[in-house]
Length: 327
Ligand SMILES: Nc1ncnc2c1ncn2[C@@H]1O[C@H](COP(=O)(O)OP(=O)(O)O)[C@@H](O)[C@H]1O
Ligand SMILES: N[C@@H](CCOP(=O)(O)O)C(=O)O
Image (cartoon, rainbow, N blue to C red; front, side, top):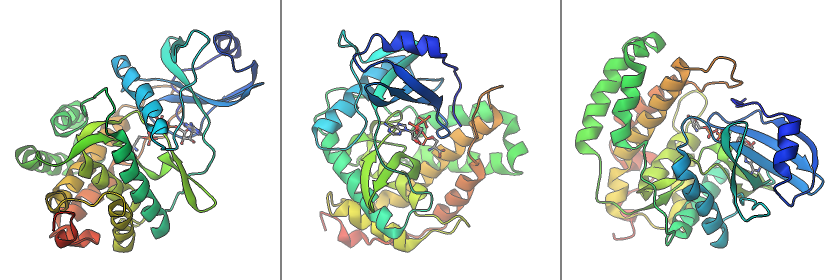
């Protein structure tokens, strides 16, 4: 459960008075998520999500996140909508944290995605990439390759307390990715954290996408790689090529990948695995005292990294380079 900052009923009632969404009926901290503090808020006007932005969110990035949700919704993507206050502001401060109120999105996330879910996710991600075109604000990916070494340094000597030999594996992988990270691939707005807990389904169909707080401008195929990791591995650590094929086919039904993107997928997938291995490692070693949060297992991503290191080509994910848009 992620609630790092407590909110009082009195404080929230006072804050709600700035909006035109009724008065407080009830609220509680949400038992999912790891980054920010989220509250489900019932008012006499409806149901909303209140997010208090925590440590990894730079307040100067908030206009990007808020504007992006508005831009994507205008482009037909089902995502939360920032609620404006009476004075037109969408960003406020509560309990000393920057915060925003967004609309509640109906639907449920799937714990064990099926191949059909993976296909729908691939399609939705490609639509998101297309809808992101033309968004006026940009945000560099602070958690791309140049951000990984500082994370590794934060974990430092404690790395091997999590798993013997982990530091050496990370050091080797990091050096290789820093030297050979793909540069000249199609780029645009990516979600960058489109895990199963951030996609909602209703009646077997993908109904919406949430949690845009890692969104940024980066390689579109990197987002695909993040999702191959997050959606297509089984609980026992095995990659499920049927799910990989479905995800990639869903994506390509909307936006065919270029040959260079397909060829880069194994390296992008290694980078995506290292990124989540590192953030999970740092979080695992630094759980804030008193916070209601369940840190995620870094070693899940060590296994995924090892899988990608053994991959020959994108064919192992269920795609052939010849199937690219420019083939
Ligand atoms: N707009 C929304 N509509 C419905 N539920 C939401 C919404 N935003 C967040 N949630 C719920 O809150 C949980 C945590 O939100 P998330 O944005 O993933 O948090 P974090 O950024 O801390 O990881 C989600 O898994 C979901 O259950
Ligand atoms: N998806 C990341 C952690 C970020 O949490 P989220 O709740 O915002 O998806 C991970 O699994 O490491």
